[in-house]
Length: 111
Image 1 (cartoon, rainbow, N blue to C red):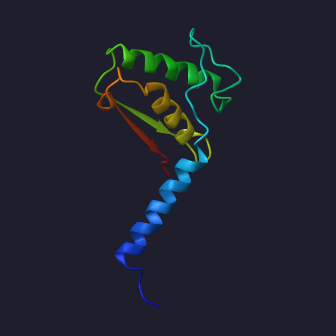
Image 2: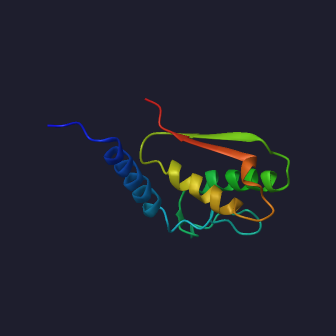
């Protein structure tokens, strides 16, 4: 059996990326109200109430320019919603007033 070509490998990577994004396309933010209180179910988020509130505070600091040029590492076991939280942060930061270069999100599972 021949090894897959470079274009086949790139196609598989692109499909995997699209599938990963599609699985979380319902996420619209961190599910917080204006007082940064997490709702049980809001904007596609369920649970992780404490983490969402802390990340909401972080998002506010970034928007105010008090936490610019920082990196945020989200680590944990597989299936603990790291990607969901990262997408919620990205949605919460989606604004003309928040430069995209202000925060680097790293989502990683370490063995």
